Image 1 (cartoon, one colour):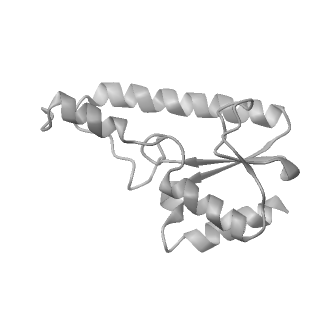
Image 2: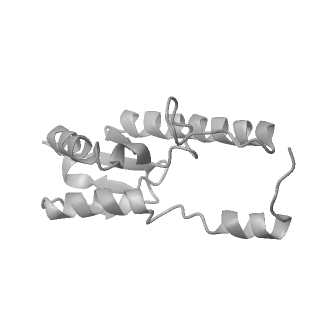
Length: 137
């Protein structure tokens, strides 16, 4: 299948995808802040630069995009029909790196929470965030 957009436009589209301060990440941060939690963001000295770091609770939170992190059995994770092999390799590599970072953090004594963007839908958000807060205490 041929891409329907020019190479330049595709490049621009991809450049607009944020790796930090994403909408799902801002939702989680806002909820934590409203409930009185204080945290640090994107600590470079920790494996994977976790999105949210709660030092007091020795907990890190990764807020993952379902597509980029290959969230299995998720409606938002659909392999593109163009350049499929490249995308599969890319996403598998992302999952491998995620696994290594999580293992390193756990070895260092950190509790690791992963929240996928699909878990922040209007139907699921309260349950997911309440569970997260419960796990922190």
